[in-house]
Length: 107
Image (cartoon, rainbow, N blue to C red):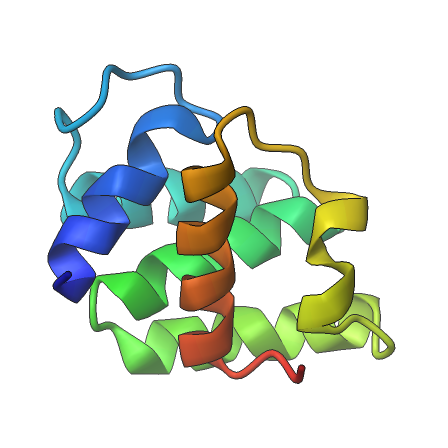
């Protein structure tokens, strides 16, 4: 599955409520970027930002968001993602974790 497709999958049912397949990687990244500016101290927001940017292939933005995630919670690991974010569909969690891995969150 391509990063663009993964980003579209991730952005469709995470927090946006948009129907499956109707959001682009660009839209998911734009939503995450806007939310990160408006909610600078919310870990989940920067996690979504890092994952969205990584899945869209925007590695500089993904790294910047991941650095902020690590400042907010230096102990956060892939193994603990399900404890701090709730996604309705298991496949969305898999996509989110994939984005976080690409962005550099430690296992």
